[in-house]
Image 1 (cartoon, rainbow, N blue to C red):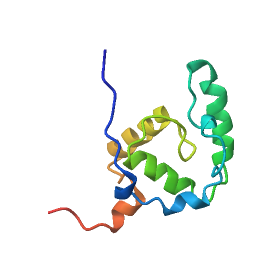
Image 2: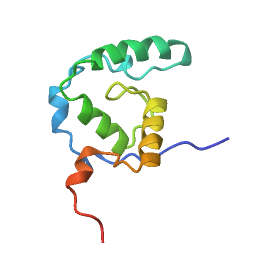
Image 3: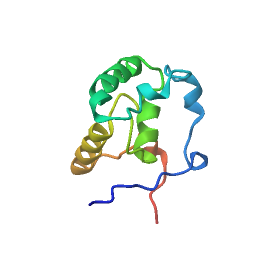
Image 4: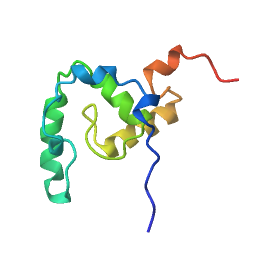
Length: 107
């Protein structure tokens, strides 16, 4: 069996001020984090509808990629979709996060 656990960074290491502006704030978390495979497709679709037009969708997606969150819908993307996005960006040599552009290169 493959261990697919990832180490999630604590919120203190990531920007979270955007969360108060999220369209999903106050909604049931079960909509974004399906408990079983059977309900996952329907719940993922419903979650993505909520994400559409959210004013902090980009920040939410950045958060999920940087943390990394290996579950749930974040910024309108499921874990599998985020993995494809990450891999696509890496193959093209694109920075994973927009805020990385402002950081000076590491020595």
